[in-house]
View (cartoon, rainbow, N blue to C red):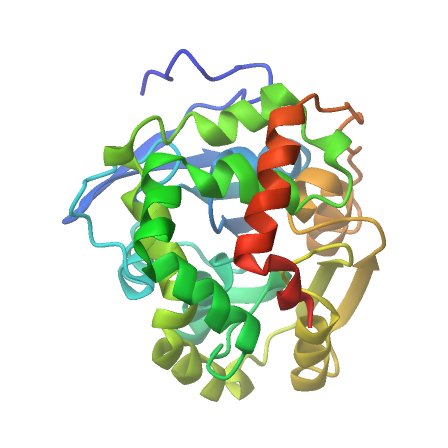
Amino acid sequence: MNLPNWIDTQRYPFQPKRFTTDDGVMSYLDEGSGPPVLLVHGTPSWSFEWREVNTALKTKHRVIAPDHLGFGLSDKPMDGAYTLADHTRRLLALVDHLDLRDLTLVVHDFGGPIGLPVALDRKDRVAKVVVLNSWMWSNEGDASVARIDRLVQSALGRALYLNLNFSPRVLLPSSFGDRRRLSSDVHAHYLAPFPCRERRHALYAMAQALLGASASYQKLWARRAELTMPLSIVWGMADPAFGVAYLERWKEAFPNARVETLDGVGHFVAEEAPEAVVRAIDPALVTSTLAPKRARWPWAMAALAVAMGMLGWWGMSG
């Protein structure tokens, strides 16, 4: 496929492939050869998030990094099938289509509840699971999530997401432990896939699913004992949304998991500490972090202060 002209091919030196589904065409990366690794992103992300991890792994692994429908370079129908169950259904179809086996499954953010069914419903295909700042349980009863949900469901919340591109514009930079890691050029690659209201419906649907898909999360959590394959956890400790309480819940449920905590690293571990992600997948490989670059967005910091007050975002850190 031809890449859009806003992509810096030095940062994203990959050639995406296309997977046709009943709901639209998904873009995905399929790089390298060897034992396969499936990288499952959340919001407001896409396969660009995994670029450093992909580059390091593909020397010895086959690396699969899909863009969920509505994200990245995939189709973005206004009336798209954007429930978490829909995203999972398409991801399972891709895994079956590529006949992936002996797979390392890596999930981040909403990629957890979207991707972990691969390990549950395709156990024979998955050898190992790596979790990065994610969850798989219901958020019912969490007061901070309830506050966020009230805003998301309101007219203001809808306007923030659809009109102002709030998720990649404000929430994404706020989630970094070290914002120098998010240069203006890198940030632009998260903004560009959502240029107008008509292409932001998947973002808004995922925000609504934070609480709205609680029944699905609960069913997933009820099956956690079925995750018997080796499981590793890599956790950014400066994540304002997925705090220590989330990590402790994972550790309690999976006491034998290998755990690496990263001080000063925020929510997007693959951006701030890609070498830790690679180490969890294949300890024999080494990569380097992105060079720190200071971001220059005085307007964004002002917007962030207002937005965080409205969302009560930091309250989620538990």
